Image 1 (tube, rainbow, N blue to C red):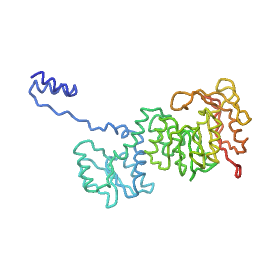
Image 2 (tube, one colour):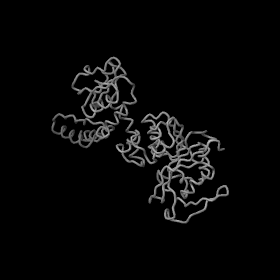
Image 3 (cartoon, rainbow, N blue to C red):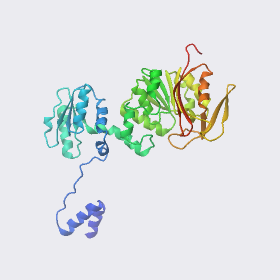
Length: 381
């Protein structure tokens, strides 16, 4: 008999095993273990300082009807106030599971946002009763927050330039611009309504900037699976229906395959090209406006001698770029840092106009970071 008891105990957790063994030996009834009222998937987001922002973002994708937010005061009362100030009909009502669900009435066309997380059978039964009463006009916190866990999950598995949701969120929602000075580019050439082809979307943060500045469409060309995965996740989570992510070698992305665009956007990409003149010619074929930015070599940085790259009877100064092995790298063992003046000269020699966007000294990787807009003059074949 004792062997049978031990066999049964083996199937349970050690703590519960001890309680069962004690009950068997003493003849006392077993007290059921307490189940912690937690949600292992959402607890991190529920404790996050950006919770209110996440709820606001998620609610923006819900139709235009009245909203009744019911549950804990913070941060949901604040969310309702912010929605009201933004012109959305929204109210907040404190509510606990001990109260009757019949008290929650969003009106005949309104939507109830239940701001308490059901974690017991009793609470889920109450949710089921609510659904019977108001149908599909009920939205739970799980529906609002679960999509964002895809980003936090990936941040724990893949390298990101920005490691946490709190700090990356402002870029995804357009409050900040990542990497490229998009506000300066947008002043020089408005992105609103433009069809953009973007090379190297990275974590999707620059893509977000293009979207929030009003681009009509963005076609992202990405070679690395981790970066395509991160960008695709952001596209889905934030509902960028005008963004398409294509896994493609940058040298194969030309007008023959993808057609023409209003803007070719290549920031932090050109020096990953093993065949830079093929890439630069592809850019000229893809659009009459090219935004190009990247590290450029100087006499001091990176270390090493200048090499002369020949193309169409002209020479261009460059230094070898030895690729890293992480998500910031290209796909070949090495590529080229151009001298910044020679990179721009490639376009001026072909009678394109070059407008400087930013020119900065740097000690990271190379000695200079150049960003410019190259424009094909009207009538220039």
